[in-house]
Length: 139
Image 1 (cartoon, rainbow, N blue to C red):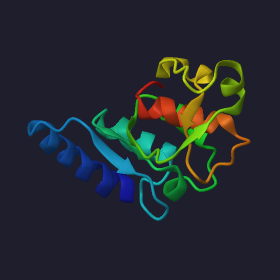
Image 2 (tube, rainbow, N blue to C red):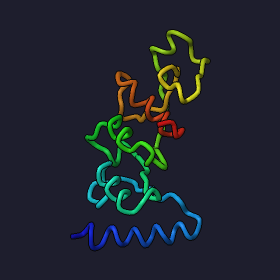
Image 3 (cartoon, rainbow, N blue to C red):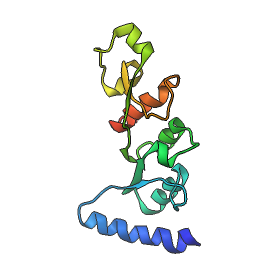
Image 4 (cartoon, rainbow, N blue to C red):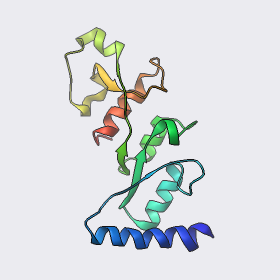
């Protein structure tokens, strides 16, 4: 009831207003307790309202317990902003080419440094690489 009678009609109206005023992206920060709180609820609203709706992905506050890699992949094309506050040196790539070799963000698996949030451990190098790609619009 809440989605069909309140949420979707409200955001259809607001999205139309926003677009009439030159705003083509509305980014929801996904938080527990909100109607739009995870990738599937964001995509549900986006499907109902249109591509003006997207995500402001803030992994530590909004996606606690969700695999960030899977969330980024699920939201491909719908991430309008991304909180990537920290960076980390990738020990595998640095060992091969050093820290001065900086391939473009479309080659994230080869970069010696990547964005990484402090909640992720250095053992997990893929989230940082995906943060980097998402922050640059590369996914």
